[in-house]
Length: 127
Image 1 (cartoon, rainbow, N blue to C red):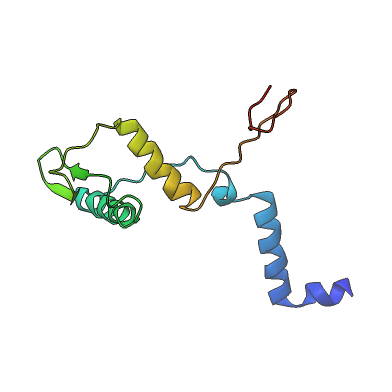
Image 2 (cartoon, rainbow, N blue to C red):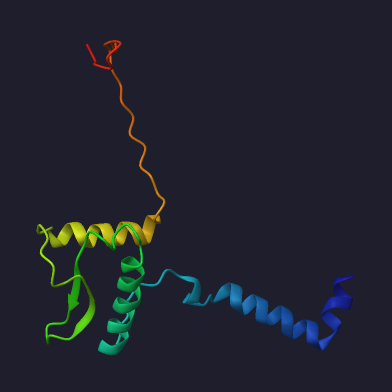
């Protein structure tokens, strides 16, 4: 049986290649260090435009918020109710909310568990 396998030239080459690959593995399957992709400014602006427009289309954001995304050069990427006055919100809250919406989805809900040793009376107060 083994003689039949080694007698054919194609099989000899195939077995030789397999042995070479086993003895001298290629590093293409090794973990590679992730490199930060570099994008042109136009690509970055396009990505920001797409994502911010998706957020702006959410109905619960439209009537109560103002959004203004502007480059350092003054180019406006997205504008919605930017001339109206609102109570200021921190930029970090906006950035965190934007990333959470993108990663978790718009319908994601956190579960909040409440534990107690007391009793809840008829009025709903914890004693």
